[in-house]
Picture 1 (cartoon, rainbow, N blue to C red):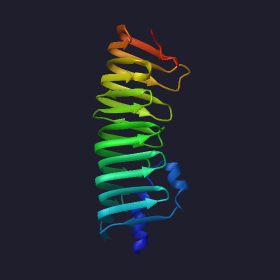
Picture 2: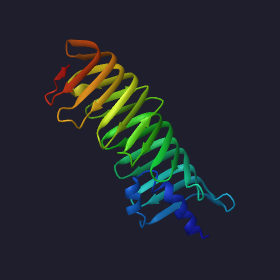
Picture 3: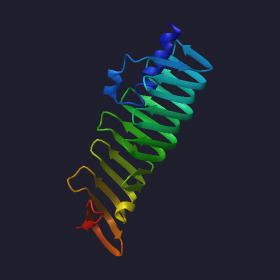
Picture 4: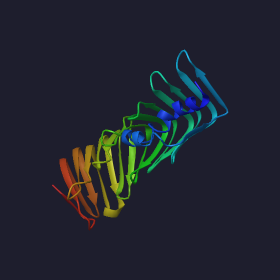
Length: 231
């Protein structure tokens, strides 16, 4: 196996699959790829490729940097660790450890900071499934910030293509443009509805201006003029 083939093997998952959708990866399979590292090894018995120190992988306009990267040609699993930074199209990511399985699922761990589609996600762990309506999951808690405000919870998940997000456990939303703050045990936001709204469950509360509302179940419709109507 030539060194050029090894480089492409590493990038097939890490540069193409881990930071872009499966469809985009297929379309970009012919894009030029490159990798630089101080050390590169390949174990033919296990199929493990390891790049260490000052690792940078590029494919098209996307790139990933880290202290160490691995790719297993047999399992198609890859990792990048140590000050990881990745960019692909409208996605930017930084974390301590990035791992991917196939071209649809990657997992970022440790001080995760990801921006995608005009939103920022932070948390200890973030999983991303490109082919599942760009599903994002922060299983151990996280925060999602957009131009409209911030949503945080003990467990946070969302479907970017649907502009729908669910926060479970100590769910909390703050929207400065609407002078709105609310919370509950569970919160679900529907951003693509004709009238965007938030459903709050379990000790729900909403505060806007001098108005306060509490209920076990509450639906809050968000108007363009900044007002909120609850039911």
